[in-house]
Image 1 (cartoon, rainbow, N blue to C red):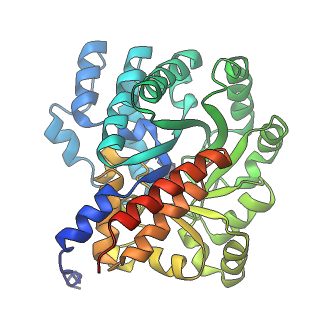
Image 2: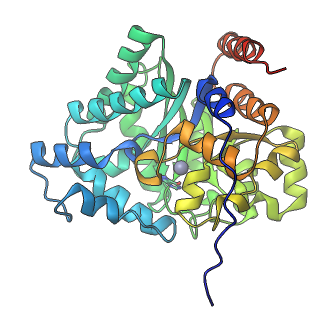
Length: 356
Ligand code: HPA
Ligand code: ZN
């Protein structure tokens, strides 16, 4: 069968493009290890004398042709092996913040996977310290707002997640200005939410905000169980919820946020073409959809690249784009007063950019 190519979309009008680029926005689904660009990855490998399977940056980039989530995770975990010191985590995070500032990201809630590093003998305190130093510096220097969400790897056991939690808890006070939540990521299929029921119950008891990846490759049942068993407040991805009309009604009614990642879904073959993405349908069904970049170094773009790609391929209008950014602030874990401040900034931006 010949491959069916999508019909090309008309390019975005220049004024809509600059409107999107300037929109104040929040990022709620971002794996800091997924921001490690090949250039920094190579530089860190050299500095730390870590041997890579690729001879050049170009060779590495060429390997970023994924067929599913697992094919990406294999490279993502291999890439993270160059991170050894506090300075490495700091530089990776500082580089991400540069992109946030360029894309008018006002607030970011950042996932990090300590198990990826503790497994290699890196102390969990090294991971926290490097990420937090960059986030605090950006807050001081530019008023950049952020939070950290420690994520458990679901391909590992619940016992392993408990061990990670125990190792991290002594750091809680030191990072109380940043570490607000717990997430669940890695290989979804065959690792359902209920595998982590006990550790999430413990995290809830400890007062953490809870999120989980669900319904990226896994079925709608995983989304339901993330809500009913893990009691998460937001669903990361959640695009397969559309297969279950009752779940869709519930998500709309409860306004459970979905942190959707369009370029990620494209690169990991969750959708074949961006024009097939259900983001606009989810939005029109009344769900609290947000746009996010997931692992931007691997998936071809940061926040504005994701916004621009869907605006073009789904022909989104200004009202829809404003709604998506409004959702990003409303779905954040910021205190109400901070949310209001950012929503006012968004309103100000929109009134200043009215077209008549
Ligand atoms: N899904 C699951 N785990 C991940 C992802 C993702 O998109 N990115 C990094 N870890
Ligand atoms: Zn993710």
